[in-house]
Length: 199
Image (cartoon, rainbow, N blue to C red; front, side, top):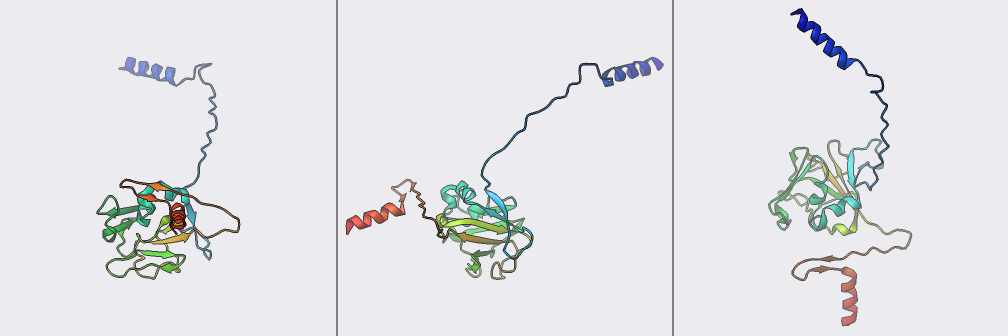
């Protein structure tokens, strides 16, 4: 029995004892990750802490064509937010809902620059009436909701604030074009030119 204990002691000492020349300092190179943020913290102007999450223009573009017609589709990229729709193509607009941190929000609060969008019971906010190409960002508030958001009805699951893409002081052009099946083309500027030619 003593022999086994002595043998285990020697084996442990051999493996735990550093061998000269075996231990080298390994220096790993720095890794820098670059990219544009798609989700950033946000706050109202009178707040001192960040209580919401803002989805930037780049984050809105990730949702693709489905996200251009549904606010809920865009905010579903935020952790803790789940969009539930009966139709995978978002065509059933009145039968969709959203879960924020596990709370289903049939009547969730949605505002555009503080103006409530409330459809009444049982519809709640109409998330499908906006063309999201005309919005700069979307903010979603979970938990502590600022008092100036929403109409006070349906804030249980959270509040969503849409921020329009306003005109700027500097001259600029924004051009977008979408193509789809069945000869669907979304190009507002080219449609305007065609109307002028027809006159």
